[in-house]
Image (cartoon, rainbow, N blue to C red):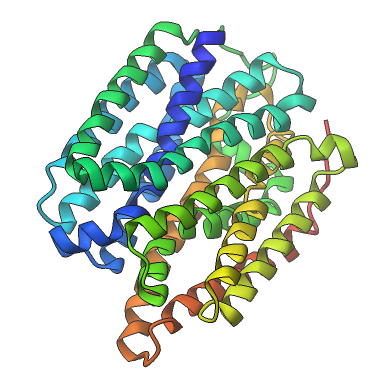
Length: 395
């Protein structure tokens, strides 16, 4: 499985690239297709929304078909097909449809890895392994910053997308060849085989769901989209400048992924590590709301802080996974991911509508963006307060 894990990691790098590359393409898509920030917010929201909706069938497929063909087939059809449609796009609507299709292709790759981790390794190692693959996968964020900006400048954005078609097909082929499936796990005798309803009946999860719904949304939403138009409109940055800033934010997200992973074993708690990280992320968002139009340096530092503290996702997945029975692991981890990615998609849609409404009456170009940062901060603090009542569990 070593080679299989390499290709699963490469697939997740692609997933991170696809969820983040619109920020760098903002100026050229505006120029060539007339795509506004609201159009791209819808496109980004569709990626996350379709990705989230796919978690239900992906969970069933992981438990019944296995991670091999689930990840390989969907990445080939959705990842490569969506990239091809994006390369041929003639309007913002084409971009939105392409991003939805790419969301289908990316939907199984991280959960396939998490499913294998949950089946093969001790529960105490899950958060660390989840953080490692998330951290390495964040290289896709890096590729979607300065390297993409240089590729677009040198070859053009359409040509760069055709390269991604080829890369997606190669990685999908690697998944089909090298990833191994495992024997199915049956429910214990006398117990219901169950499904999503059985998972939803676990009381402990309901205090985790609210924070899971919003904790990744600020980092993913700002890095994946809003950083581009925000830096372009408020500070006049072109694709190259946006690429540099988003590169630093991506590096911070990578560091955060690795840092969160082992903290439950270091401090003997998951809940309070997660709460501390999300409160610090909220403070960075409040800092952007208060000072986000005053200084480029302050803005970059606060964006990096949002990236660093906003990657508690692997620890939250480990916390939720600890309550899920082994025969429902596939559907369990994908349900948790549905809340996380679905929250990003929902908030991309909400912030897109909010941006349109506030920008129509704003005299200051920065005001619509500052209101988005405030919304993210309030939601994060409110959901962290609910999460504080959850049951702490360390394997």
